[in-house]
Image 1 (cartoon, rainbow, N blue to C red):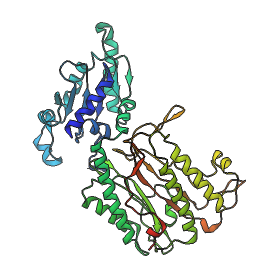
Image 2: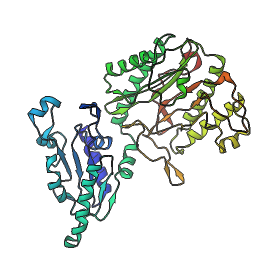
Image 3: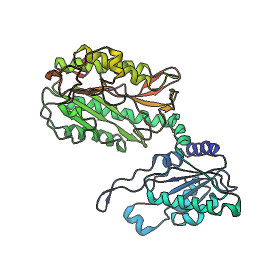
Image 4: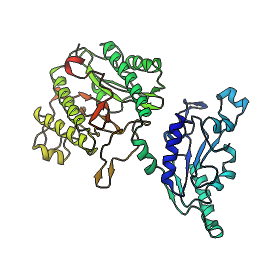
Length: 435
């Protein structure tokens, strides 16, 4: 992988011109008091370096005569490593990660100016670490003040995102290998959950079964907090309490994916706890399934990103009218967004190093066009939320629909000829999910 990290840095530097780019590692996150969460590197930082330690800074300076890739890292320190784990150290940062030069992180303020004073632009993303933001802005302001003495130095700051995130949006073959593995592990976990779900079990038991398989198969763990939502809990989009005991007539919505080699999967399935849909559950389920099938069909190179969502919205709206939950002319209902009380989220998001991965969806008035190597989710749903108040021109909701929540989600790769559903191994047809 080091060759690929190097190629990414070179590709990015080719776009920086005479600028210098600075990237900050992710901070340690505190669980409680002095207990920290397992460390997870910032995705941009990892994408460019593969380096997985905190308190590090990467600098790309394509204009520098000797050092184009510089790492500032924690130095080797035996006493601290005994407590918190081994560190790469300064020397190995060059040997293992290919840095042209490496320094202790404590030398940042002293050494950084030499990589900025000949740059005409500073590329830096103003993140959540306000102290570090202030440090970088301080360097920038100092260089502006001293610019008249040198006639060189950055006179503008530009965010790294627009350049780097367009690169991250298209996955390489090695990235797709990791994503396929993440999808395969999550597929196994979902299929096992379908087998072991039964009335009387608790949501957290199914969560435990799923996450056991994640770790057993070598995943880093869940890609996000697993949603295991039975009954009306499925109407809460990001329900994560997972404490309810499941009942015979419930549907169970499971939205769970894993991280493998830093890359993520994201799958949702909804199925009957007792093995058979009720008539109302089956009707709404088939509407969502048809919306998903038709949305997936729109994942083609050259198609606008929002076409899958627009397709799903139309199918869902038509279905809601057919069952009497909405009333009116389809185009007008869509234009006035009368479907939104029952379908309040978008149909897709990018997927990769981040679950909601980077990359724009719209260029001004022009939607992003799909291209081979992009991976996105397709996840329509219907949620008949208890206590939903219909609009004045809409019918009262028949109680038989209330409390039903359904979502079906797959991970879809755009290919040169169409698409590939990476998570196709999880069943979703009615006769496949009924028992």
